[in-house]
Structure formats: C-alpha cells, structure tokens
Figure 1 (cartoon, rainbow, N blue to C red):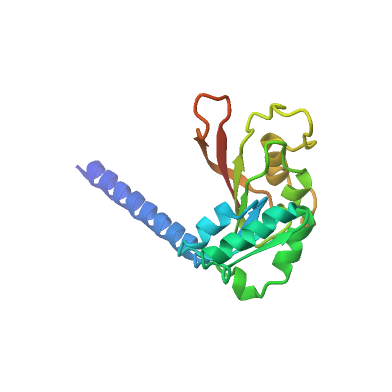
Figure 2 (figure 1 turned 90 degrees about the horizontal axis):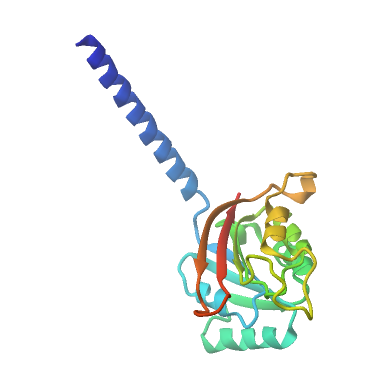
Length: 210
C-alpha cells in the first residue's frame, strides 16, 4: 500500500515537472514573439513577402532580388495593394544586401525577431547567401522553399555551384567554425507541396530554426 502511494506521489511529481517545463517553454517561446520582420530573399515580384505583409504577425517586409525589372514590379505590387508603407524591395546580390539591410535598422525593428523566407530559382542558391543569413544573429528562423529539392540538374544552361538544397542546408546547419560565421540552424519541419501535378517537379518547404 505504501509502495503504491509512493508511486502515485512520484507520478504526480513527474506530471508537475512536465507541466512546469511546458510552461517554461511556452514563456520562452512568447519572448520576442511580437510582430516579426520578414526578410524576403529572392523575392521576385514580391508575391510571398506581400502575402505575409497582410498578416498580423508581420511587422515589416524587406525584399531583395537581383533582377531589376522584378524589383520594380514588386514595388508596383506593394503600391497596388496599399502595402508600400510596410514592404520595401531592394535590387542587388542577396549575399551583400542582407547585412546592409539589417544593419541599418533600429533595435526596436527586430525586437520581434527576423524570419527569412528564401525562394531561390531552380538553378540553385549561392552558398554565400546562406552564409550571410547565418552570420546575422537577429535571424532566428529561415523558411526555405526549394523547387529542386533532389538537386538534379534539370537545367543545363546554368546551375549554381553548391546551390542545391542539401548544399545550402550544410552551410546553414554545419558546425560553427568561427564566431563570425554565426550559430548553426537546425531543420525543424519539412513539407512537400505538389504545385505541378503530373510532372516530376515538387516544392519542398523546410523550416530552419536556432
């Protein structure tokens, strides 16, 4: 009888500890959970960034794209949707622009954290872009949208060296070899999206966190 009571007490203590841990985790997750700044990398005409800009969890959108006509279209789309006050787009190489755009922001602009959305072309993403993302300590999450997750060379006219999803993930999540390289991310979730039925193409969305 005494043993049963002791077992019950132990189970109650374990349940209390689990509840405390869950509560601590929830409190930790709530810290800095104000509206996040969204960094839209390879933003194109701004489709993803502008869709997120309407969300209450988004404080501001900063987009970067190396195709000047696409950036101009993104700015027009922001204006047409009355979002030009919360969304801005820059033209240039992402690996150079990421640090430039974030370093010029006041501290309060990133209090809610920075979420990077990366949607590179099928030809791949330069590893330097992933290194630039990792080097920014304010970026806590990266949502990577890959339209060539298996890394096959479906185009032969131009392919970025080291630009496959696996290569990019290795840069984001690899060991920390130098302090300036930034803390590594880890893959937290993945979801395949069949945007092109009856074709071999598939989009893979992977969430990296740190």
